[in-house]
Length: 113
Length: 110
Image (cartoon, rainbow over the protein chains, first blue to last red):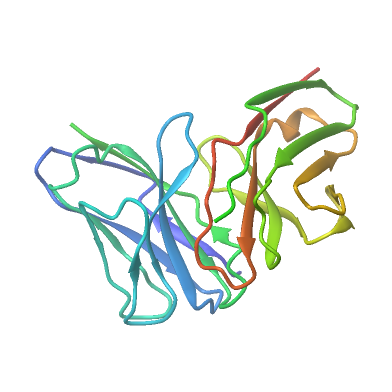
């Protein structure tokens, strides 16, 4: 059963703490992405990775970090430097060179108080 | 990345055909047009993609005029389960960056 998994679905943290969101895919896709979605808004790209051990900043990378040590995994760390971290976070993957057809995970809703 | 413009919201009764139009005046020669559907608290789902003329699959049709400056997503005989936000995106083949606008919120009324 192929797909993308994100865990946990809901996450609560205190302000000032770093938190890592998990994203795993078994679709054998080369490219992976992290997006942030705020209420009533579209998706904004945080980071993306085309291959293992390589990643690029998206439109709103400040306050976030990623790693891509394995093809299947692309974890996102929300650091204490991110000023408004409460949001819905979506991970996606795509076959290399077919980036316009992305497969999304179920998302993680992060609440920081 | 080509900018897209689409209506913020639309209402439709069950059983009707719904057409959502997207404008993309500065589309580039190698850009494709892609539509996604998103339900609340879920990730977007790919619906359909095309380059020119008409594309049809089991859930929708995509109409693209010759100048490619706009496109229309057509949903036949909508049901309540089609209530969702629909995003129009324009990106080059092989592009790694997609830009999601605010989309069109479709509400299907019984």
